[in-house]
View 1: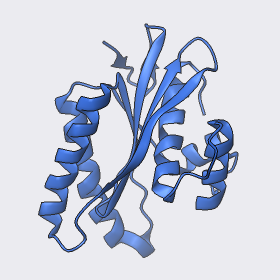
View 2 (view 1 turned 120 degrees about the horizontal axis):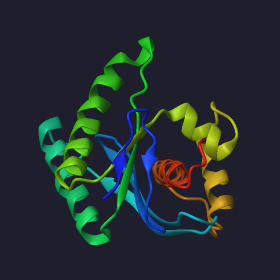
View 3 (view 1 turned 90 degrees about the vertical axis):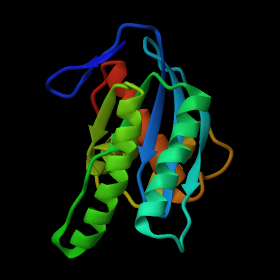
View 4 (view 1 turned 180 degrees about the vertical axis):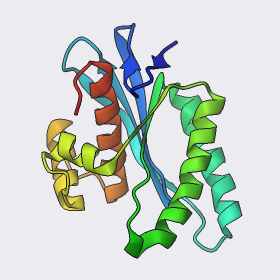
Length: 179
């Protein structure tokens, strides 16, 4: 089992890792499962998509759906690590940050119940590591992910690209490459 050091970096002991990257949301939650060889540059996107939550349902119902759907992804893919986008808040979007925090809490609970080592990485750090710019646009992130993962098309919707980028950042940390 892996553990997290007090500074937030991961201790990696085995050669292969499967990282689940999650871009939390209360309408759409992006997820990506990426396999890493921790001693080389080899990465493989195993699965990526979005969990579509019922737009007309109450927040509590959507959070239950997020929890259930995420548990299905975890059961299907058996990740060894998880990486979640850290909370970003701006005074102009305080309400959005609070709603997003509910989704993050559900995601963190689902991951913790499976005893997965969890890394939380700030959005600007993910963008800089993957696109080379901490303020990259959604389209820039999609293009960077498509290129780095040798995908035939842009990952759609952008939440999928974000989840892949989150998993890429987490996997790079396992290799000791800090973004």
